[in-house]
Image 1 (cartoon, rainbow, N blue to C red):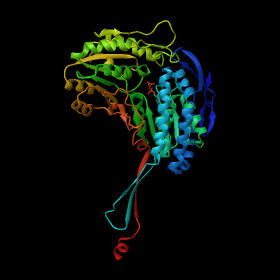
Image 2: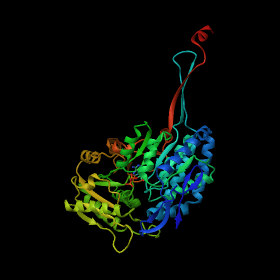
Image 3: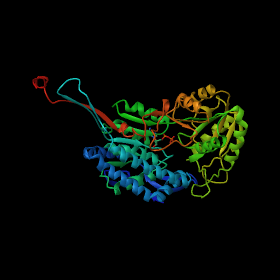
Image 4: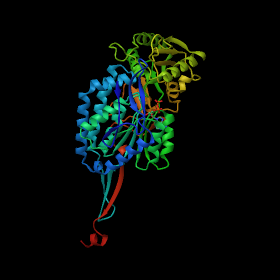
Length: 485
Ligand code: ADP
């Protein structure tokens, strides 16, 4: 049983009124710990600490900042087992996936540490004599980072690492369901020698804390991963003080299997993309489009692969699909499946919650005969349900794939090189996996088009969103002086 604390100005603290809440293991519905339930007051204390720490941290050399990030990465590797266990305990994913999450989190720290030394500016040739024109890049200021529960460690690392590398200080707010990974992340930061106030952690009432992030003038940038609905609230709220925002919002990924695809690879890809994290990732395949000429053999292979998945507690060795995060999520998925069935979809396998246990488990499910009228075609599912649609032509598949306000990730399988280029350019998405169902890597820019967000995390420009450009014009000789030579 863990009783977590907040981390503000270098001190481990509870809520000022002492309030706490229970953390639930979604695999058992049982209490596994407590965390402080903070709000506006704690948010203000954390922001003040970040503001106070900013001048010193931002003036340190990039090399100095990078060495602390490297130490954090090493400590994270050393603690990967215990970190992974906390992730599985609080959000349910199979331990194997939690271990992979700790690995990519350490990679985010290292990648951004290395990018810190390369946040180059530009020297611009002057149009007149006697002037030197420079464009330099400086940290934007104290940053507020809001993370979701589905990747509790890697989302913290993906936001905090580039912010710290760029010279920003941070107030991190994890999701209520999964505070543990962020607490351990802050412990690692402290042990790695990060100065007090550079990283602060507040846990508690999201709307009250979010409100202070928007209203307190000390915060200059907001980086958020979560639902499109809350993202829109934060974008609106950021307008008052014109705060910079990075938004990584919902997705509704199409997964297209063309008639010339390697079917076995496509099935493996669909399993990976749809059922990883029990279907609770924002880049999960949400609509599987299959060419009608291969639909029968695809469905047969897909059904047999889905039936070999093992649903269970993430700590059990053979589990491949863990629970959903809570009862609300379970009900949402149930309703989507019921809606599709009422409107004529057919069940290929699965279709209901797993009975006989207290955890929030849903059977890995395939729906066939799905159409545009059904909720599942428009709403992000966030569960282990794969709806399958048929198509006849490439134009039709691309048009259907793009027919959504979302634009995060899209996938397609083909062996035709011309089609690879054509379709990857026609898809209106920030991330396209061509014969690749797991495109996430620290080296690639992650982010969405349309209502899936703005800004990018990771990749060669990962620090850009945390840096401001400043144009400096230095007149080092008057024009007469220059002419006199
Ligand atoms: P989900 O539905 O996946 O939980 P949310 O967008 O509700 O997605 O949550 C993502 C993150 O946003 C969490 O840390 C949550 O606490 C936070 N959050 C939710 N509502 C607000 C809000 N009004 N202001 C700021 N943060 C919020």
